[in-house]
Amino acid sequence: MHDVAALLLELGAVVLGVSLLGLVAHRIGISPVPLMLVAGVGLGSGGLVDITHAEPFIGPAAEIGVLLLLLMLGLEFTAEELAQSLARHGRSGLADFALNAGAGFLIGLAIGMPLPACLALAGITWVSSSGIVARLLADLGRLGNRETPAVLSILVIEDIAMAIFLPVLIAVLTGAEWWQALGAVALAVGAVTTILFASRRASVPLGRLLSHPSDEQVLLRLLGITLLVAGLTQLLGASAAVGAFLVGIAVPPSLAVRARSILGPLRDLFAAIFFFSFGLPIVPAELLPVLPAALLLAVVTTTTKLGTGWLAAARDGVQRRGRLRAGAALVPRGEFSIVIAALAVGAGYPEVGALAACYVLLTAIGGPLLARWIVPSPRAALA
Image (cartoon, rainbow, N blue to C red; front, side, top):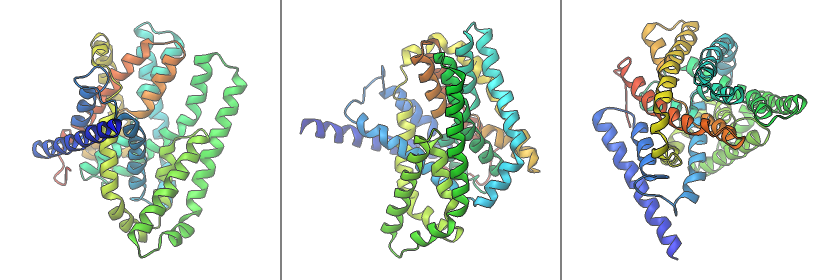
């Protein structure tokens, strides 16, 4: 009974605290994401207060928050729009890899890291945070902007590319045989290809399943399908976020508006927990020694992400202001960067862990602020 009471008290305090942060962010005209990240650091490992009893709930809730963010993002677009945008942005994806992974790898070499750690750092600086970017686009009222399809294409290409990068990285970190990495890559690519193909064919049956007069039934069915597809995608070696995004893509446009209305409050709750939980594992005392290197990484790769967004939006014929918005939206790094850092630390490269944590925190906080102020948007609707 005592544990249950402690769980409820901590969780209630977290939810009310997040609510207050959202109100403060609204008053000062920024996204609430940076404030939630800082609060997580302050209340996590080594912070002012350690949230211990609520963590067993916060962890899975945060995972659901990412899936709901990507599901809602997918509801804004159709399979045809995604296919056309991905086909158009293959070169943008290559430029993204060259600019951002290349910068991380070269800086790793410059500060004296061994080659496997440099490869891990390349992945950490390469991939933007789908969860943070999805919330940011919604907060700033930019889901309908001309540059947004280019941003989404880069995110999807990065998540799909992780299916290739992660098995290769694991092989390098652990000294595994090349054929083991090749087999894992083939399995993950096959899974992503199958899911991409299935999402384009699932619109009609999914529409029939969701065409129910009860909002409760629509909520339960769509959420259940999203969790199943995301879990299957993760099990096959790709990103669960890609699976959730593709479920949203597969929902017919005639039902997407209703689905967004039903899922909106649930998304807001779990997404807030995700952003708060993001900072919990970060130990503040470990950040200071690596701050100079992390700042160097953040400054360089903020510039390279601005270049990525500029090039991608330019391929869609977007003007200068939209190109800057696209680049700024891509700056935050997040969940994949933390996963890559954990793999490197587990393989015997502890120097990657603290550097990655500090770097991710800098970009996850600085990115939303940059996106808000780089080109002021008259349509911003901060929540």
